[in-house]
Amino acid sequence: MDLTMDANIAVLGKESVGKSALTVRLLTRRFIGEYGDIQSVYSHSLAVDGREITLNIWDSPYSQDFCVETSLFAKKVRWADGYVLVYSICDRASFNTVCRLVHAIKSARDYLDAGKAPIIIVGNKRDLHHRRTVPSEEGRLLALKTDCPFYEVSAAENYHGVLMVFHGLVGRMRDAKPHAKRPLGFRGIVKSMSAVFTRRRMDSF
Ligand SMILES: Nc1nc2c(ncn2[C@@H]2O[C@H](COP(=O)(O)OP(=O)(O)OP(=O)(O)O)[C@@H](O)[C@H]2O)c(=O)[nH]1
Image 1: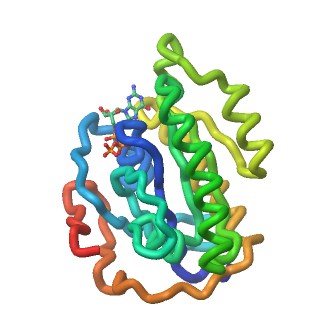
Image 2 (image 1 turned 90 degrees about the vertical axis):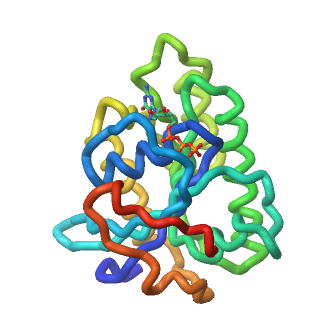
């Protein structure tokens, strides 16, 4: 991948796992607590190995519709150069969802001939360790089995860990085979922003 170009990143996971919190942490370095459920694509520049790369980050609510022909999920697979799959360490069902997502993305990528866009697995809410229901080992094991990097972070407490997730993904993207993306009308819609308060509705997708 040419690091002077944009890279599209889809942030996926069950509701309330902290997808928006992670995205907003990366963009603003802040944790603001409540994020609503607006679908958004954010544009953010990141310096990696002395070069600047613009990340278009699609943060959207979870849907169980994995249809490779018609679903929003299929659109994301055609669009994305990389994926951040998020679960909460306090929510076992959200971990199961990430397990399903890894396999669904891999199958859809093959079906749509969408290259080998890398997947990162993230266990969020590490600060809530007293409510943990998913041991770190399970996250690591899933990562090992599926050949995906794994991170445990707290969007609430730590910017650096979140930054490492996106750095790790960009690092993997450099090695991945790029795919020819179908235009989805995103050009001109994605808007650079420095704060969450300017994010745009994506209902038209
Ligand atoms: N303690 C703690 N709470 C978090 C963390 N990340 C997110 N939250 C909280 O979890 C709730 C859900 O966070 P969101 O970022 O809205 O989650 P989401 O995955 O985008 O949710 P949907 O929009 O429903 O898909 C909010 O109340 C956040 O404040 C974290 O690292 N630690």
